[in-house]
Length: 160
Image 1 (tube, helix red, strand yellow):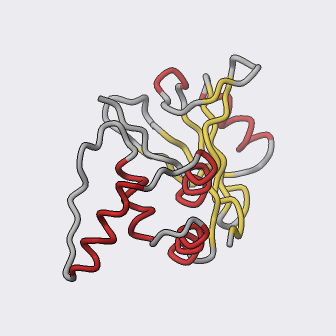
Image 2: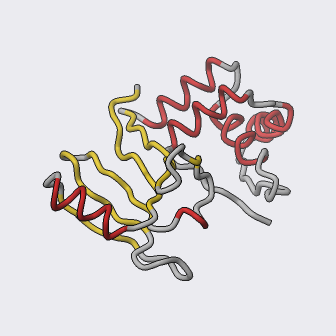
């Protein structure tokens, strides 16, 4: 199911020093950067380690939601993105392990977010309405939530 690591993300206090280390000293190459309004430029930099494997560097850890502080105050770990061979099959297997449908697991995952007050869903058959309503009775354990986040990659962080 999990086939590899797509990228590992770090927040760094000096993007230039990090790029010098990874690109000039270790010989990797920066493949692209992403911009986001209101964030340092570039917001994220991707360094290719091997085909399909990257380091993701965030230049300022102060505003990075989900950052896990490291013993070294100069940098910190942010997240790991796992690759899976078949995302729908992986999520269906997780749902089946919990005696739920994929739709119920997806709805329960969305509805657990504090900023979400309702999920707009469509149903074309009475059975779908009943199944979707069943999602409100599902409590996802920390283990299941962690596995879903590992499957999906970086989790979106919501703020009110």
